[in-house]
Amino acid sequence: MVPRTGVTVDICPRDLPLALIGTADGALALWAHAPADIAVPAALLIVLDIRVRRWRRRT
Image (cartoon, rainbow, N blue to C red; front, top):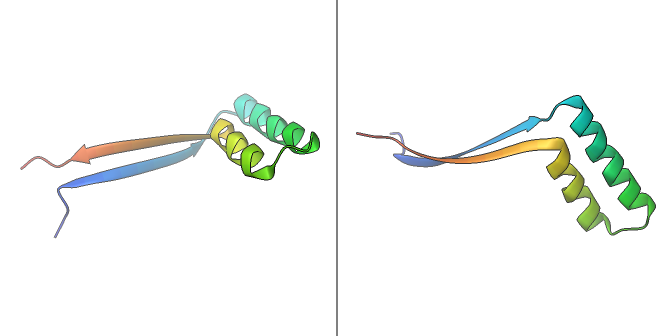
């Protein structure tokens, strides 16, 4: 039994220069005493390429 509708979440690392920028941005935010609840997710959004796709299987 296969569902007809679904959601696919693709998480891939970005290219190296953008990943370095995201890592440096997160480290700078933590060094400046920003809350980790804000700094870490923001850095992950820069470092990772996250795509959410909704698909429907046609019959």
